Image 1 (spheres, rainbow, N blue to C red):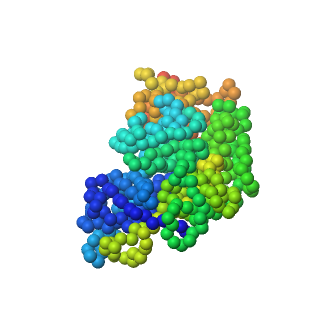
Image 2: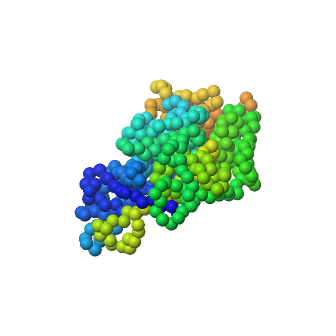
Image 3: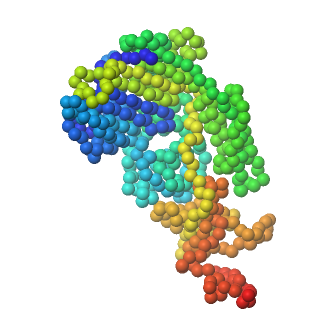
Length: 503
């Protein structure tokens, strides 16, 4: 592996004297659509306390060949490693872009009931919580600055009137939505801090620039005086050949939604998915294309080693002078690990510290014109049982609003939002014991009626009213005192009673 000698490694943490922090080793991991992790070991003269370090802004600055690169974030973890022979204390910190804050905690939320939303609307709201209404989110409203993110997305996405976050972190919620629709994110590091970039096509990545126009040079084992790529290899992995998706839209029950998309290149086998929640074939085609592109870009990629500090996840670069012609061209880094060590005679060693001052990295990349799509790896919450809710409605009357499909608005008990009446839910279908064309049975539900809600295929975005539940306020018409009666009683009091005898 090619190595370059660095001139300086700096660590700054808000509230701490930078001159008292002596970093000597760093391992910095970046990956598209993942939270970067920057781990730094350093020596400090005085004893530091975690409450003075955690969540503080921090910067790692590397100086190599007279040029600087900085990595910014917040301190996520802090460790006291030990004490050196001369009494100096050694520490390590893990620094992450502030997006990691969205991975702390667990929440429930519902989007779309006050107006249809798409995935980009949800991302923007989750970043700042400007639209937050749930108490667990309003407490942290604005935790990520409005200027923190930049949207370079070019695609359009379907609008939905009911999108549920259920028992998952905000970051997991956003991650699974982005994986579904083919949106990715990465971080651009500048002098003043990091910038969160959202994209959905290769043109969203910053193109190769002067400091990422790299030459291939085999590793010599000595310290390099220029930035080169020293190792480059191609990996091809077996993958499926086709993606099939199928779904059902009750609004158009006779329409076939079966579709398929080819995965580029040779493959065997297929992926069949049902219940991805698309309303027509064009929506399904877009979802299947995302799956196919994710399979392709994770099965055909390159691995390399270099000493260029300006490579980063989401950065495009150009390689020249490689003896294999197909290895010369433009590529996009999808993940990278930077390794930095700084030999310092003033270090108070407390462990084996036999290393030289150097910088090197290992990276994974794809061809620059290959669409990057993340594999669907974030767990999707499923509700395989039932949840409780209450029939909702606007106005002063007892009657609930029923639309032309016989659907109701339902406020779910896990929903903490203080929405106005009829704004906490989309219209929800109600299961009946008998029905058909111009026939059936339906007893209208009143506002405030407790209902049992199930979910089609466990999908939290597809609720169905499966039954009515009595409670201490809304008691059953049959109780211990009339246990031998079969009773039907309407809201106006019309009653049909069938006495079954004492047997």
